[in-house]
Length: 126
Figure 1: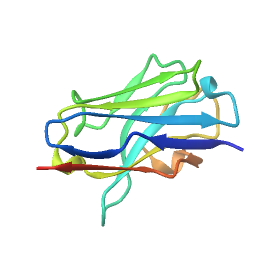
Figure 2: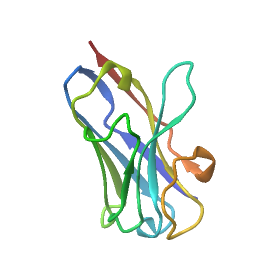
Figure 3: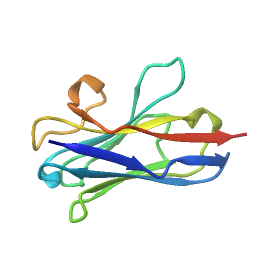
Figure 4: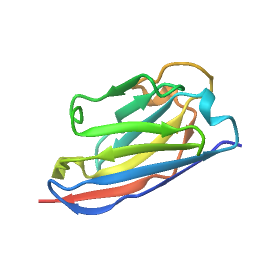
């Protein structure tokens, strides 16, 4: 059974930084692309960033490009999202997600992911 557990969320002032982590278990983490999504109240879940199984290829939503960095440590079965220059509009619950098939590239479609964490709240005050 695949399990994803996010941590690292919290309250931060605009311009600040946070680093989210996602601990994965239940299968060979290094064989799968991974993604970060977020959902604000009253809005649909949206893609934030994705990383290939090797960690070489990364993808970002335009709204976070240049401010957020996705990375992974396959030896620790952990996915990260470094968030800098945070803005109030980044406030949301952040989720990590994993697809069912191995060795693919991450996509921006939530329906492409089979496994989700419980989410971690990020609140950015102005």
